[in-house]
Length: 123
Image (tube, rainbow, N blue to C red):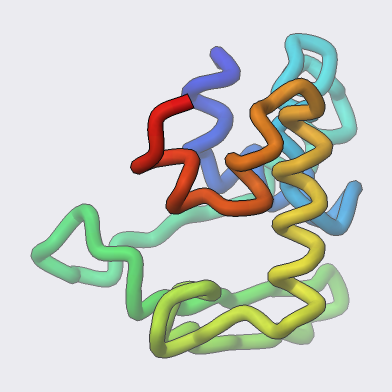
C-alpha cells in the first residue's frame, strides 16, 4: 500500500488511531505500513456500504465496534468533526494547529499567524 492510499484507507487509519491516539501524517511510512501489529488490526476492520447513493458522502456515518467477548458499541456520527454542524473544541483546534505548525517548521510565519494575508498580500 502506498502512503497516498493509506491516508484514505479506514482499515489502516483505525489501527493508527488505536496505537497513537491521533492521525499524524508522519506515520505514513513504509515501516508503519508494513508493521505486523497494524496489519493484524487492519484485517479486523470492515467497511460496510450503507446504501447511500453518494459514494463521496462524508456523513452521516455509523461506527460499530465488536469486541471479542461479544459486546458491541454502536455510534452514529451525524456530522464530520470540524464541520459547521460539529465544530472542534478550543482544545481540538489548538492540537490541530500545533500539529500543522510542527509539520511545517520552515513555512512562512504568515501562513499560521495571518493566513488571509499570506494568501492575498504580496511578499
